[in-house]
Image (cartoon, rainbow, N blue to C red; front, side, top):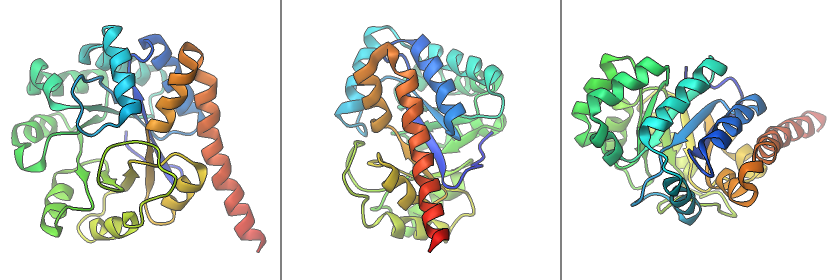
Length: 263
């Protein structure tokens, strides 16, 4: 179920199978318990176009351990049983879905209780078969909206999206940035004119300050590379460091609210 109970909501990404599926399972549960609203279950892919070096290295590690789309879906089923109310989205490129079959992909997501998917390199214009299969099973379809998207294209993306719209804060690839892109708020404003869906802002967000800043104009922030960097550093001992990072985002938000109320 996609619902942002916190303000701002947190969409947290993991590359599944990095360093192994057991660590991903434990880390995802800890992230949910620490305050993540939606977990993006990243499917490792050998030829990414949107991911920066941090997530590329995670994909390489996960592929070496043999992680597949079927394993990611099975992991989602386990997470659903353990945390029935958590938002669960498969985050992938199109090729693994085509290998499984679009119809079969939708059936397996529905059977396992995963809420839906975000296919990074699937454009709204080419998503007809995918949309039909996902709608048949009442599954969420999240599409990316970029600062370079025209207003007409934003409208198309919004009409085909379910759950939330993912606003890419800047052009380029994923990765931690020192500053939030200045045009992120403008992009969110343009999307709001064409949809009432929640809007999550991602790409480059990694600090409590950036997380708080996104909350001023968007419904949620999506964080990936910062989490994957912690996993790269700590390996199988990542669970508590990642949970501490998630709690830190929330703590920073609460501290800012308290400071505002005190003024």
